[in-house]
Length: 167
Image (cartoon, rainbow, N blue to C red; front, side, top):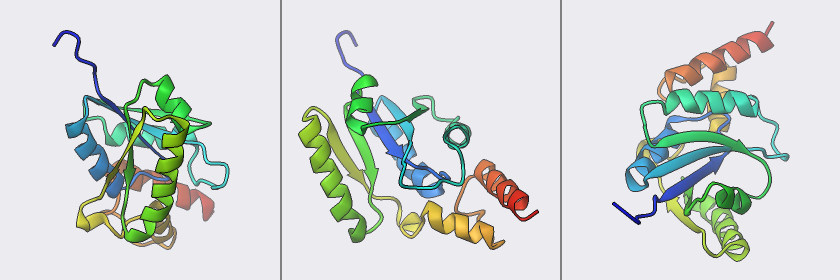
C-alpha cells in the first residue's frame, strides 16, 4: 500500500518481570497494530528485582514469535519516547476499577503534553485480572509454583535470582 502509514503502538511498563497478563495484551495489541514496541521504563520510584537489560531480554525471548513486536528501554517522559519512535498510541492495561483512576490521570496528562498521541486501555483476559509482577515475585520468593503466571524463560530467571539471594 503506497502512502499508507504504519500504525505503531507503544506498550510501556516496568515488566519486573513480564507476566502472562502482559503477554496477553502484547499478543492482542500485535493483532491491532502494524508494529508494537514493548518499552521497559526506568522508574526511579521503584526498586526493580531485574535490571532494565534483564527485563528487556526476558521480554524479547517471550515475544520472539511475534514478528511485529520489538522491545526497547527508555528513560524520561513517555510522550517524548513515543515521538522519537513515531508512535501513534500508548497501550495501557487495566486489571480492575482501582487501576482506572490513576491510568486515566496519566492518559489525560499525556494528552495535554502531546495531543497527537492516543492512549488505548486494554483489559486482560479474566484469567489474568488478578495477576501482577509484584505478586508473582512474592510467590517465587516464597518457593511457590509460578508456572501458570509467567513464560518459562521468566520462571527460570526468577528461580535463579531467588536461589542466588538465598545463598
